[in-house]
Length: 399
Image 1 (spheres, helix red, strand yellow):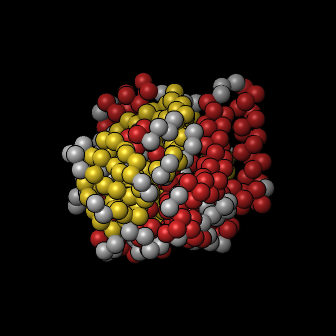
Image 2: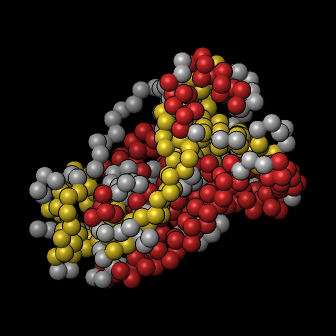
């Protein structure tokens, strides 16, 4: 049985990116497709969209993925507005204040996966196989992964990029702290009476944040509405006219009337964090290691930074680092764990702050928003964090 340097389990965005980065670092890579490969999509806009930071764009550009995207399906946004329901004032961020062309980029999951899988196909050092993990067995200087169809794959290191419910994390015996939020996110694409003007908007409601994120059509936005499970069920099951009316009211009609909506999806919100990022020859990457509240749109961005840090540390260690990869994995975790914990804490505390209902808490929130909006150095610092420009960044992600 041939032994590959790296076995990547999971062919989603983070798994495909990790495979490309490690192949570019000179390693042999086998990518285990745990889900069907992306099929050609229609002209409709995906319900699953991502808000990518400039740092994530730099990573994707470095592996030749960004140039494969159709610019007409990517929506850069250069402004962001945040406020509390019922208040006119809030915080406005502008990319020009940081001398940047954009704060972030909205793009669809299927388009990004299509570009990534094309990039995988352009790398002959990456072997593509399909299967579902069933067991792990030690094998001298490697680890064998058994799939449910009784095949075996041997690798010196295995990266679990198989999502929040990661079967490989379970097989490796890594515990995960899980906190279920009292919220469910409703996602949809809507058409509004007024153009979005390349501005991402987020309103904090008593039940959670409501975001309108710009898509390429001037009057089309992707919405993420975090609310109670009961209200989310009502939103998904309501007729289109009722949903559009209630959505417009909740948003304060900042973009005029909501004219049209796509079908809606409801996604329960959960915070996850693995107690450790590796065990033996298995290392966790992306959602397999952590999951954050979507209010900051940072979930995928954290995963792409994981992939870039792991590949950078692996390249520095070279093939000798895979003889006993635990030292490599410890360096990877040291560089990423603090950054991830900071984002987990920030999003969790911000969500809880706006869910806390009392007159004094409301006054404190409003005063804080107004004060922050007036302090330009503080706003620039917050923007730098939101764009992924600061922190212990891998080389590929640095501005």
